[in-house]
Image 1 (cartoon, one colour):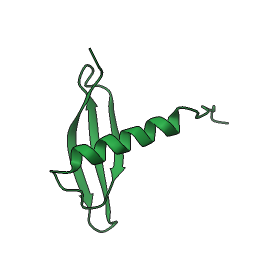
Image 2: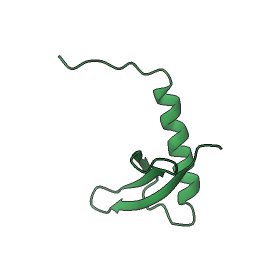
Image 3: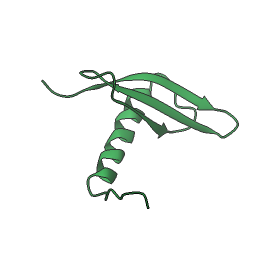
Image 4: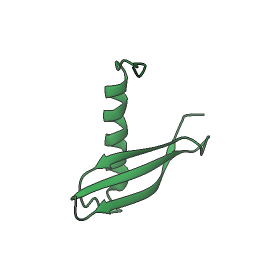
Amino acid sequence: MPKSVTVAALTHDLVGKRSFVVLVWDDDPTKQVSLPVEFGCSLDRVRTHAENAMRELSAETASISVNLAK
């Protein structure tokens, strides 16, 4: 079965002019991620913005190094 996530929340910070989407894994609700999306993102466009944000995160983390705190 393909992995999937569900949009659990869309929040807008009006003062900071930022918007975030919270995604929850369908097969493990303990896995969640909050990602920035276009400010003022509407509900009818949230899926597209969430998919784009997830793909950008995947591309960034594909080659990221994990360091130990000093």
